[in-house]
Length: 434
Image (cartoon, rainbow, N blue to C red):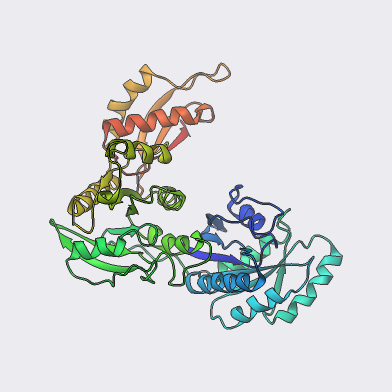
């Protein structure tokens, strides 16, 4: 499980640009309009061989200053609570603002490592101007320019030194995390499974503050159930900020083998549910989707289970080989089936296929449908093997790996799925030089 680093600061100091630089892809929308970072931002980064998760808290301008200050305070508090280290970003152009002072007041009380980072320092005059940030009382600072990357190296050198070492993964029970939006029925689902009201179930979104583990032993299968129910705090935020959801989900998802994604059928497979799905997929976890409260969906004539399933699959493309079950937690319908399915997905994720079997099955298929020629170059795939990792990864050895395009990789993935059941599990394919 990798360490979590949160970037906090008011809007428009360059957090998203910095975040993009660190995760090396343009994922956050960067715009000069304050508060554009509406979406959650989560990515993986590594430096000197140490991997960490990066969360950009996004500056939220919500109408008036005072609401906004509460908002920023809340984000900073959450970052303090959940992250292993905090990057507090300020902007040399505007100098120290009242809001920066507000945030630094919160950060001075923290026992965790805090890095004060002054952005937009790209001239020696600006470097001299940066001195005024000593007034924030956070000690030494780092000057960087997110746009061209100047200064980020020293910051990252010091940052990875303070991050906790990755815990050695002991051989422990499989972990199934129950994830989803607040109020989808996650706590009720776990209560129904373990047959006791171990969690307080209320109608207030976000009553469960932390993820809680429950050992579960039934159907001759033993595992840990992880409830992340409170993917948001009690205080209902003005905007439905996914930031809270993600912060909580990240840890649970990273630390699990299978994610049971539960959502409310009356609300649909919306953006927030989709984000949690892709978070699990990007972390290569097994996934089972549970459509809860199906009994409350009106108009079943034009909205059959089949049509509903099709809509979910369209949102999940190209990774559609995922079990989707319709359940009613309240009426205890199909909840054991959900767990049996999660167990199957767990077994699919840990499946190892013998090299000989892989080659016997796939090489004839490849001979029949070889990769399309590219610039008159013909790719010949000679040999396939599964890599010895926690989740399915395959290496295809060939003469010209650089000419194999994504559509063909998807074709290979589909053939793997057709011949060796990998339902519910992301597959990674590498083309390697023979």
